[in-house]
Amino acid sequence: MSQPQPGHAGGAEPLSPRSKLAVTAGKAAAAVSRAAGRGSGSVIGGRVALKLDPDLLGRLATHLDVVLVSATNGKTTTTRLIAEALGAAGPVVSNALGANMPAGITSALAGGSDAKFGVIEVDEKYLAGVARDVSPKAIALLNLSRDQLDRAAETRMLAEKWREGLSGSKAVIIANADDPLVVWAAHSSPNVVWVAAGQEWKDDAWSCPSCGGVMQRPGDDWFCGECGFRRPQPSWALSGDHVLDPHGSAWPIHLQLPGRANKANAATSAAVAAAFGVPPQVALERMYQVQAVAGRYDVVNFLGRDVRLLLAKNPAGWLETFSLIDPPPTPVILSVNARGADGTDTSWLWDVDYTRLAGHPIFVIGDRRLDLAVRLEVAGLDFRVCDTVDEAVQTAPPGRIELIANYTAFQDVRRRVGN
Image (tube, rainbow, N blue to C red; front, side, top):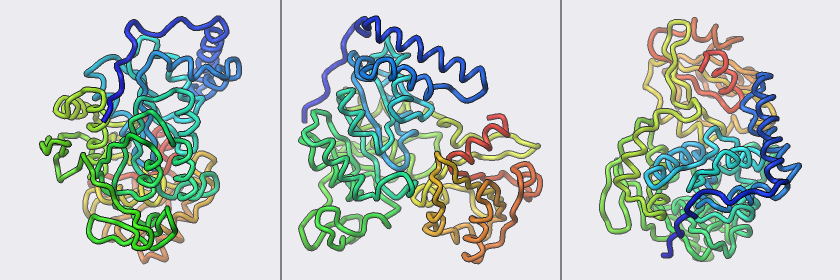
């Protein structure tokens, strides 16, 4: 396998006057947005900059060895883990707060003139376009599942966009061998490193993306009995609490982040780091420094109670989150919105197996709390609907509280609890 070439020494080449003006204007717009209390300003800043110089994203990336990370779930955390690992080999610029469309990515790279590596999370719909702009050295593909049904394409269509967009790419593709949609998308690329990262949510991968036939799933394997499309042989693998490298060596995973999904993210991150010459032991040791990612997994004290903040945006994400919360009788607060950034279609609630929460005291908040209440009622669970997070926390029985929220609901909670 060919490896990415080292980045250019000495930082970025000087920008043109037009590009410099675009960067300055973008930073000014972001500062105004922050001063007005409208968030980090990265998106509006990037939009202003790209309006003035439509090619700015590519220009800002010319001196960087870029890694793109895309998936339905786990891309923000994996981006953070890769950035931490590559930090062993040089300065890194990254969109660490998850602004993952071209405007947010442009804002992030505008602050990376002295960086060697760019570790960039990319929204699934924009992956192919961003890859064309920044000529990445590596692309990590983690998973594909249903999400934001009113905005994103059906998963097979999204996989096809990846497949077409990445066809013939010079980047090293680090892809999850356990997700048939990811494998089918990555197969168009000439240089793929397969990672056995696992796939707990399988409801979007029962039909063959190649021919439409029924997928056979004996154990951890999968294949299509009609066209022969099958799971590739991985060279990296998650095995319990270890990462197995292509030489068969087992490297222990020590994370402060909880759950099997984050171990899978670490395995993929180790494979990416190795493609840039960072040994697994060094990469995994650096990943231990990550305690939380954009507020996710943080434990905050609010109204005298310890509350752990967990993000789950779609059925696959909720399934993974249920697997890492403390057992009953730990109280659980669930919060669901359906604003633009979440997707306005809440039918996905019916795909989530909420019976896994049986035995937990459950409290429901958020804009769409009544939608969620109907779903829990049908699941036969006891719960209480509350108007605010304050009411839910004050009503919950003793013990640390697990709070699970989708995207904008999570941001609402973070603002309220001061995190």
